[in-house]
Length: 413
Image 1 (cartoon, rainbow, N blue to C red):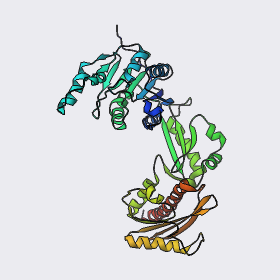
Image 2 (cartoon, helix red, strand yellow):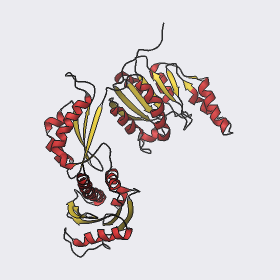
Image 3 (cartoon, rainbow, N blue to C red):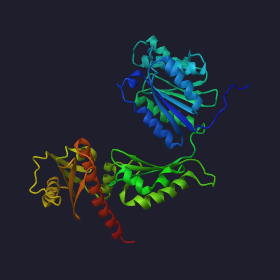
């Protein structure tokens, strides 16, 4: 009689991040966010993300209750060799199984030390433990093997190491292929629009309550650091036989109709990605002078290959002849920094206080002319200066986009 447990499709998940360094705030958990995003894109609903201290009773109970709620439970951390690494014991306790040393894992572990000419610490034998319902997952980047557990109820538990450089490849190379073989997800479709020049509440008002409350496809707005995002998602086939992609595309057409003038990108595209794509298509490079922005434009664009020169000028040193929003000397600065760098485009940005926020004046000079705009941030301080950099990127992107569209329309058919 087969002892293989029944299998069920993986539609729901919970994530457990294990380690007292997380619950006392010494370490920031990035693993759970990455795993939640990966699972959501597969059409899996993540019901809970929990951080747990290194206590056997708490971790065991967390696994036990998560098994009752979710098809898939993924943990990170707690796979080291020391007594406070308790993930293996906790899964074993939750499933009522006993751990034992697996000779294959032991040989793999001892080989790691032998190759380095070092004696094997016997404490590390703990990392060779396995329970009968688990497969061990090799870890080429560390000494902590993972576990892929086929639970008696047909669900799955996965134990991954905590360090991201070990967790990521194990998840991608070992876990996801196994999960796909077990019916992971529901054929999800996701589309995300990135907005500029509009706040989250204004965008939500334009979309309307009826659209934002619809359960299928789900439409939601999020205020991100670089943009306001509108995310549209669906999974599976509906009662009428429409696929997730068809339903998402239908909602996306409505979002484009209502907010199209504010959409500058899709997915997780950054401003550096979007501007860079335009500049690379035009064969341009950029020089920047920013005044009173504390170098936020340079921070936003980073080490982009199309960025040739950045001058950061303190506001008092960059005093201009006039306080007008339409100051022609800012255009002169954009032209001068462009010429000094010997590139195609120059961007000059000036940030100055206006009430409790900032006025952001932007000038762009390219081979096809100049553009000047002044916009306002929503707030002052460091956040306001970051918003100023986003405004500058938006004006620059608009200028490059107009040039690219003009060049495209001028091409012979």
